[in-house]
Length: 121
Image 1 (cartoon, rainbow, N blue to C red):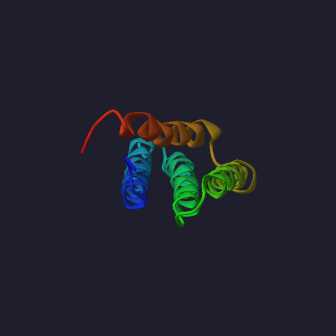
Image 2 (cartoon, rainbow, N blue to C red; image 1 turned 90 degrees about the vertical axis):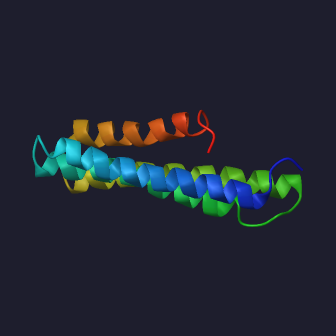
């Protein structure tokens, strides 16, 4: 086996922590535009971190046969997208926060996923 379950958990937790850091940074950057924009950006990135945490908890729950692992991964992805879309609904529709800031925060948090595997550490 090339990668252990613990290794996957460590990578996932590092990504979640980085996404939460990006959420704080996005909130601080958008604070220049106003408190509503800062909240929208931070919540937009925070929703992605929540989705990633839910996915990793589901996907790395336990060892098992390949079919069960694939099922956990797929159900984790569905759970992640439900959390992200539900969070965006709450941010944009319920709280009526600025959409540009929320989407910018969401994109910034997803950039962590793109960059996480480019650097070894």
